[in-house]
Image 1 (cartoon, rainbow, N blue to C red):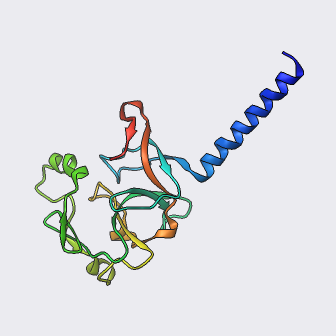
Image 2: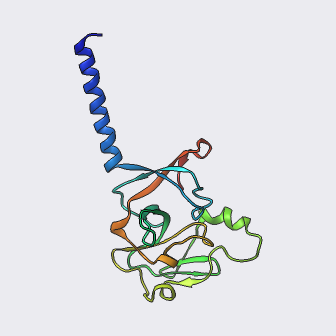
Image 3: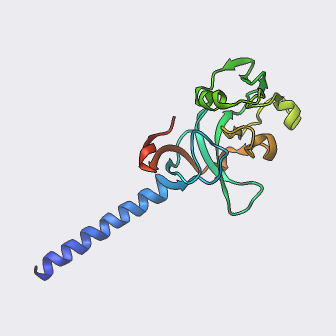
Length: 180
């Protein structure tokens, strides 16, 4: 190999490194799931890819800085968007008075044996003293509703604080694929 070929190889690797660093910084980020608050959708120890700078929609799973634990991030599901009313009655979700199915909870609900609901009754007004999700904020819940520290406890999340939208599991390999 001559000096010219080595130089080209080095330049090619540097360009590739800059592209990968740019993608990692501006487009996506790997995230490690810690805890059981998103069971069974996301499991403790899984590694996921989250996309940055995406439009957050209802039922997306997002990451954001933990408002009650500096240096930590939470992963939760977006339930209420700005202007929405949110309530649970008889383990069923109602947004703006309309009942919504949550098929991602069916497996978990089917495993319950104590006769208690997965999600206890609440209304946004009871939790926060406001009828609707305020402008610029989101109401989030963990899928493991009985143990999740989410908007019922920590309050609304600022939309501007959303770091990324979880889209893909890449580890462990037996769970490889998109996140529903």
